[in-house]
Length: 156
View 1: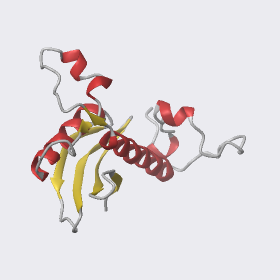
View 2: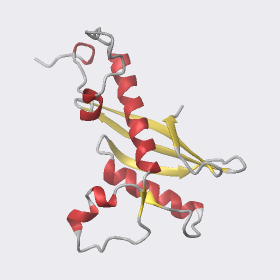
View 3: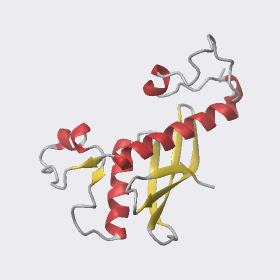
């Protein structure tokens, strides 16, 4: 018999299992299904922020090195500060990186959003896969020009 969503515990990522947000608390109280999904989405947003803030070499890895292209050597996005790139190219690079390095998301599409002065905004739409459950999600990625560091939050 299959357990209902509310009776099951979501297995967090390895990183989340190895870290403890409240180390002084000896045992964690069981979370509700809603809290677990919220924590899972927050973890994906955190990991997307990390992915988009890692800069990789501007030189592409040759296609014949398939394993290397799927490895940590290809993790991150191109360093846009070193070369002129337009917003559409950046959107494509972001979409490719998220598709390649975020296995909890599928059907990833990145859109250039309405942008404020001195900032680039992107909307990431995808399907979030949580063990036995899948649902559409939105994440908003913002890149202030002065800091050159992405901030990703769950979209609304």
